Amino acid sequence: MEATAKATYVRIAPRKVQIVLDLIRNKPCDEAMAILKHTPKAACEPLAKLLKSAMANAENKDMDVSKLYVSECFVCQGPILKRIRPRAQGRAYRINKKTSHITMVLREAE
Image 1 (cartoon, rainbow, N blue to C red):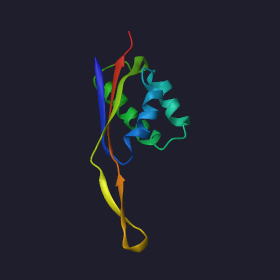
Image 2 (image 1 turned 180 degrees about the vertical axis):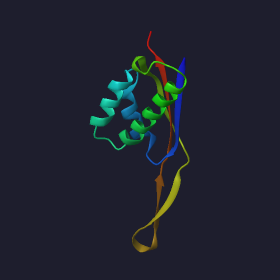
Image 3 (image 1 turned 90 degrees about the vertical axis):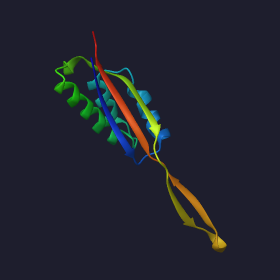
């Protein structure tokens, strides 16, 4: 049995989220939460919130919360917010503000 949680349109680049996801993949939920609390990365805050949500979803499906582990977690790129930055001599440079769609799947260890 598995529990899933998704966070869409998170305003952080997928490349930055991927680094933190690699740290918590295949770890027990309590260990993954500890890693997220003590890692100084911007992506840790939305990922901790997502992990709590996935654990709550698992609890609603009558799964044993103490046996849960992060079986799958991945990030996909969302839409890019395109912004303009004024530069010298009337030029304009484009700034791409990337978004992420993050998915986390928890399963019970056997």
